[in-house]
Length: 93
Image (cartoon, rainbow, N blue to C red; front, side, top):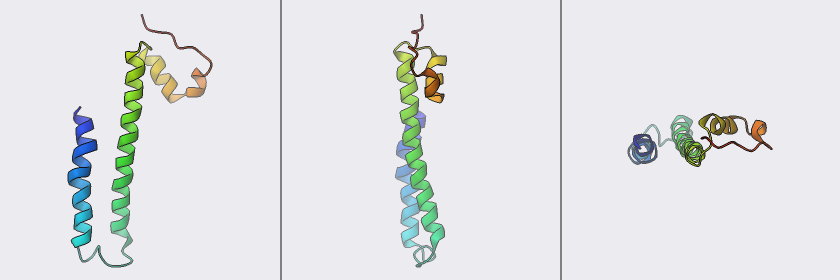
């Protein structure tokens, strides 16, 4: 729960928004042709997208485990879906 709140709420609300506010107010970042500040903002946005994707993947594996799939099989199907294609996953006992 702390990972979800820190990555999907605290990081964008406080860190990313403050960086974008600073970029607008800073004389150095507001100059035309200053690509460093734009690159920093792009990296922070990409990091946010990756956090959302990682949460989706973690929830997918958790769902598989909660529905009775062995944890090794759930992780294996995530890591190598071609290996598990065509095979029916066995439920844990």
